Image (cartoon, rainbow, N blue to C red; front, side):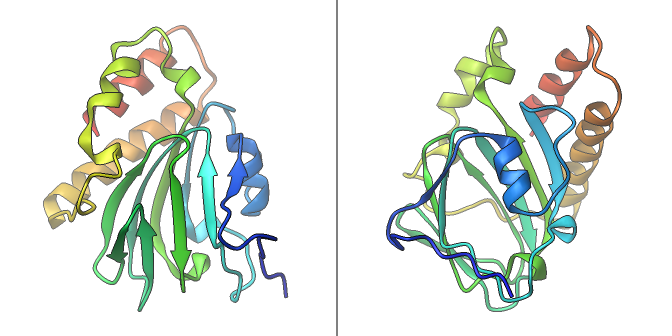
Length: 180
């Protein structure tokens, strides 16, 4: 059984690339090194594997559901994943996990490197979104209708990532990101 252990349990594991996170989670190499979507069901870890804390060089947007008894600390706040929430992590922020079995969670994770947004208005605007800040008091709790809308947008993003990139693909992806 593989158990992830950070040498310095209070020090987050630095994850510099989306490919590195994919590798750690037992996922296939991402189709695009700057943007990726995966489902928690696809994570290939032993049932007792814990991830203590990470800090990434990219944005992490996730919707987690059905994590029985799981709690996650984001900044100074703990979130309860029993009912499902959507949360947003900016580059270099620390996400600490307490008692979360990664392969017992349902939902998705969207990873976006800031370089992917370069040249788009979203690159500047995203810094203004309060839910990427530690000052946010809680993650977003979604209604069933909102959740369906989010899953539809993620499905569009996933479909665009899976096709061959052409001159319009990045524009379409950024437009979908703006909808989130």
